[in-house]
Length: 372
Ligand SMILES: Nc1nc2c(ncn2[C@@H]2O[C@H](COP(=O)(O)OP(=O)(O)OP(=O)(O)O)[C@@H](O)[C@H]2O)c(=O)[nH]1
Ligand SMILES: [Zn+2]
Image 1 (tube, rainbow, N blue to C red):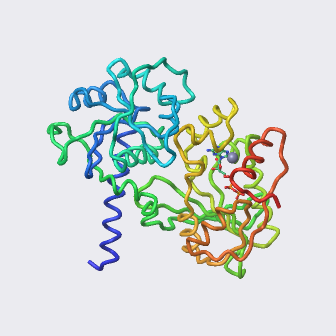
Image 2: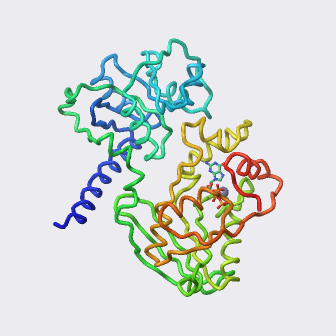
Image 3: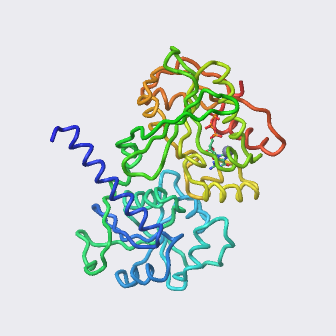
């Protein structure tokens, strides 16, 4: 097998393991994180009686709760070093009650009264990988864990999936393995009658990314391109909390006027945290946090997207040079870093609507979005 093909095959197998493990976590099934400091994991959000009993059968008294630093700081009521990605706390028996620890890990839930929680040490890489796997599953980054000996033992008869911590931590870079075009069809739009929807899939994820191709962008030296992240509430429902719906339809109109363009519609809902977590972030914003801090309090980064997939879709479409419709400097840098030549930026601003004013102001003041 040629080296490149063998490398792709390896990447595919690793992704398959990660996605199976993420899917087990979503179903409340424990998984084993392999590495120098192996851990047995169960996602706190989806843990049920069966999974918890299995963990306790293997762990005895050794159960810990791994949390994102921000959540641990809130629960332990003390500042935490910003560089730590994951913090572990002991989970005394009175907290091994499913509704109790599920409320504890979720900042939108009514908080139980907790005492006697103490920080315990956890291998930094294993802790970070445990939370990363929960995030890949789009669950709250909070995991019940049992440190296992190396090599792990005591697992016979449990039929648990094993996934290497190091692969989980590099997931973002091989997430797009096998990205390919599946189908293209004409879909005339009210604002752009000459449009096609082109659909893409990767090998291992269930995500489907789309390109809305207007006119013939290949005939332009630097066609208009918009890298749009899916927003169910804004794009579909017309939510006033954000500007996504206006940006989506505005970009299509603009491209039609320009004669051609490509709108990438990427499966990166909620800046990559998923719809459920975005709705949680909305609840926190209604209690006074801004859009950046709400993500962080939940244990997510402010923006969990990466632009590899967008650049890879453009490359498949044969588009190497673009004018980007955006106000987001990270998109300009991100696309350039992924090998797309950004010949210019076209501002894509819409007036505040009375509901999204704070949100737009935060994008400018904290995310560095350009205002003209
Ligand atoms: N987590 C989170 N995601 C949000 C929120 N509001 C909108 N989004 C998501 O943000 C994404 C849109 O990204 P924006 O940051 O608004 O804009 P941008 O696309 O990065 O930048 P522009 O190109 O200038 O529009 C979509 O996936 C939305 O679902 C929010 O309050 N919290
Ligand atoms: Zn939106």
